[in-house]
Image (cartoon, rainbow, N blue to C red; front, top):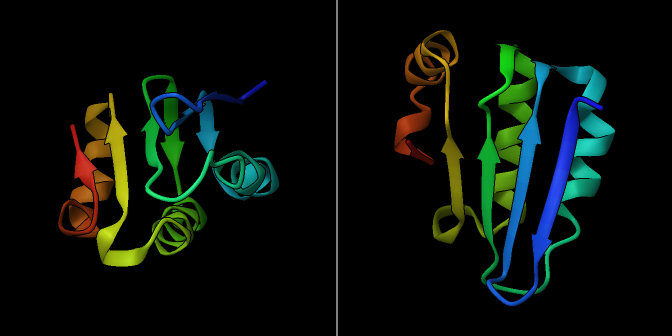
Length: 101
């Protein structure tokens, strides 16, 4: 499965890992994953360690997650990006909207 989710109610953290292509084909699963939030002030970690490809629909999904999580107050971390994915996120100025490590 290209998308896996781990919810930690104690830490109020939802970790979503995406393998392969992060594109429109995973939009339904991605939305369902972040909607499993254990409550307000949830921290979201998007682990892109296994992500080989990201397209504009994935960027849109990340923006929808940010809005769902509280907009400017959102705690969304994008982690373990490959150099190619990091470049796309930088060109899209996502480093201004998300914590990218």
